[in-house]
Amino acid sequence: MKFSVLTLAASLVATGAFAAEPVAPADVVYTDGAIEASLSGTAGNPEEGAKVFGSRAMGNCVACHEVTSLNSNFPGNVGPMLDGVGSRWNEAELRGIVANAKLMYEGTIMPAFYKVDGFTRPGNGYTGKAAETLEPILSAQQIEDVVAFLMTLKDE
Amino acid sequence: MKFKAMTAIAALLLSVPAMSLADPDEDQLVLNGEMESVTETAAPAHLSDVLDTIYSGWRFRENETQALQMDDFDNPGMIFADLGLDQWNAVEGEEGKSCASCHDDVTESMKGVRAVYPKWNEAAGEVRTLAMQINDCRETNMQAEPYKYNSTQMTNMEALISVQSRGMPVNVAIDGPVQATWEAGKEMYYTRFGQLELSCANCHEDNYGNMIRADHLSQGQINGFPTYRLKNAKLNQTHDRFRGCIRDTRGHTFDVGSPEFVALELYVASRGNGLSVEGPSVRN
Image (cartoon, rainbow over all chains, first blue to last red; front, side, top):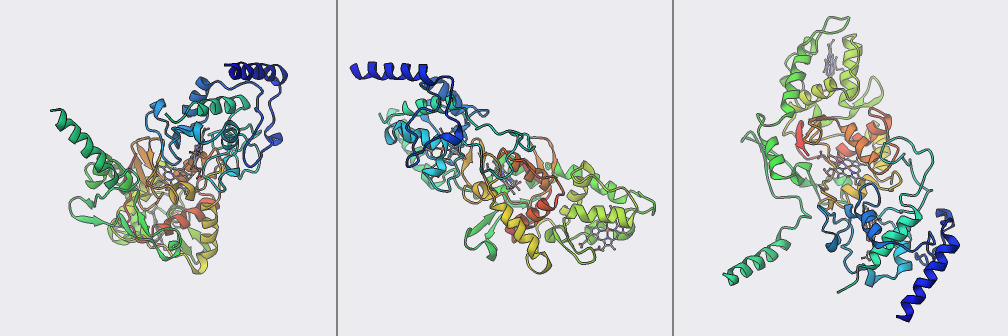
């Protein structure tokens, strides 16, 4: 009880302090592939995160991962099933995996969702044309939301 | 009653590991009830360190899609091959010639041609795709306008020429004068394109058999081209497929007919050496 009040207070403070200034992709600090600090300064919303996870236009994580509770049509199986993933990894580790999984898993097929450089022939979304300016695939807040969603996937 | 239901469920669970989604199916492709097609064979030597067996994309499709390709009366691609035959006989260009004026009966003259393309053209000193060769004949031999590289007419003509090699093994050369082009194509195959940083190999070598969303990933072979796709209800050319696959990596794709795609086509074709030519095939 006391703990959750404290966490809430901390996240409120964080919200006030950083809400307007997300950490830019180039400034993200990774420690062994994990990211300790929130990227947006605003606590993630797991319901929004579930949308990011399932939507083709956003994370499209479901193209490669299944989550039983989402009940998605045709989830892919290129990546592991993510039930219980919130018990396997802590929040900082999950944030790191979603932002740039290549640091945790060398050479992985999983795309880096919070990265804007180092690409070969990046496109303008899915148009097939050259990119003009590159935004990360997910915004800082969308990363926080999807991480909050992953944190709800605990082992029974 | 209850007991029976339980047994049925147990049986279902047990049957899963025996035939998982991750495999190509076991179906055999026999065309029109008579012509056997090789849809699975030992990988060519140049792939021996990455693959043991190569499979036609046909083996990864649903039964209903597969069935459409087994009978020429059901295969919508054959309609386009017929249109190609009309083009074959049509006089066009300053020389007043048709393809038939020089090549006569397409079933004789074009037998086996699809199976060895792309191939080296000595006089021109270049690797030619079938489309490039067709256009060279139009321009040089007929004094006719070239077809647009991925136009309906070009794809129809490719379908007609492919039909004449159906059932024959793909057998493109990879050494000698084409070697440098082949190497360039190979490098592309392993390049991680786009903002998603995905190479052809990530999907079609490392993950064939797996599901990426609703799509059952094949080895991305081109022995079936041109392919009639149920998705867009038309005949699709190899380079259009390449273009779509790179676009889907959030990548800046290449143009149809570009030197990059010619090289990639040669390399991808060589990964299918030994599979039967199937064009025009049916895919979803």
